[in-house]
Image 1 (cartoon, rainbow, N blue to C red):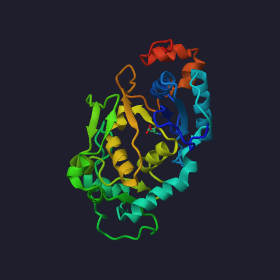
Image 2 (tube, rainbow, N blue to C red):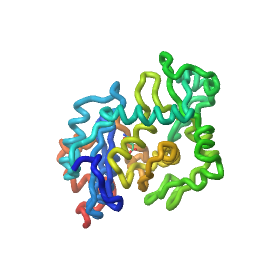
Image 3 (tube, rainbow, N blue to C red):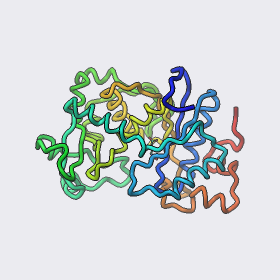
Length: 301
Ligand code: GLU
């Protein structure tokens, strides 16, 4: 079934959206198992979205191994996989809507200049410090060469009716954030401004940035439940804000724990030893993968 077809709004539609920039590891397996099982238990759908926005880091062998790893784990997805890179028209339309609402400005700062102004990201931080706003009022041409486009967060909040109104917006968390946050999570102007701040919507190289693309793509696939690791919990208020600005419905969110190695470090794509393909070649079975991430080895109905 195509993802643009109308559906009953009570349907559960889950997704797994890995980036093909490295091998899938145990953390990805956990996310995919949780989303797939939730869809299966609800007799809903499970979609695969290849998050290949960053074409400079995408490798076709990683796309192939996403398919292969999921099939090996028995995590069959409904319909065709969607490729984020093929959604450019929708991404650009969404960006244009924000530009038309006068919420976007062009920024010429290099990463070095930003780091010099705010300091390098803290070890263990989920995201770099908010952009300090050097270009915010500089009136730089949006279509000038080598500019990033940023969301003016203060204006975005005003466009939604200001700080008080913002508290009426929120999202429902079925899992939990890193500090156990669950249930209805209200947006807060202060944390939007001082957390991720004026996020990049389009990078200097012309590529649409993750925060905008993920909102558009979840809507395109009519995702009802977003299941992902809790390091993205702090990005979710920004996704909710973008949904409100674009007048899109908001899915339910289920953030889950992060899978760590024996020393407590979170797994990264460079940790080849935890790659699913490596474990598979060592004779580890899908049931053992489930056990390794703390799930019962047999799928419970
Ligand atoms: N491609 C993103 C990642 O792998 C997806 C994040 C999300 O699920 O929203 O981190």
